Image (cartoon, rainbow, N blue to C red):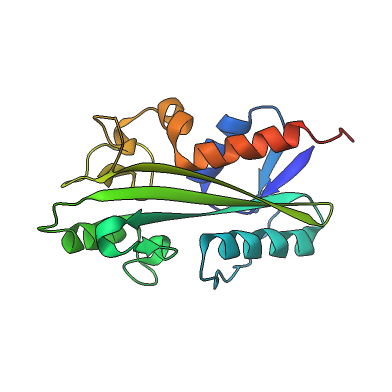
Length: 194
């Protein structure tokens, strides 16, 4: 089965292909030469994932899925949350987002946080939602060069290293996106083969 992943993000695509293996043939929006932006104007991760998946399904008529991920910091009342990718403002990158987060966390002892991912799958016009989360804490300084986004400042519960210090295999085995995609994989494996 060919399944469109509604993303232009090569890091996410590599992660998802590694988790799904040969269960399905995952293609990205780049593979479809679809470079039109999708406005993520939802107020929740669920809404944004749904907007992306439904838009791509409407454009191409192919089974597709989309994800939306947020970092929720307890001491910041759940921020940056749904605004994680644009926390430092439009046109900013992961480094700017991390810098803003670390600035806002200065002097705060309670550094608990969690990553959440919601995946929306649209197949045969029906939508299914899957989610995954991982608890951890915000580190005082970035560490590691692997991964992307907030990975250098997030240390999962029970670990001594940040996501950015882990191998892709180790991170995928415990990450929020990994957990959501594994649930998606279980769903896909139960579908009748066409």
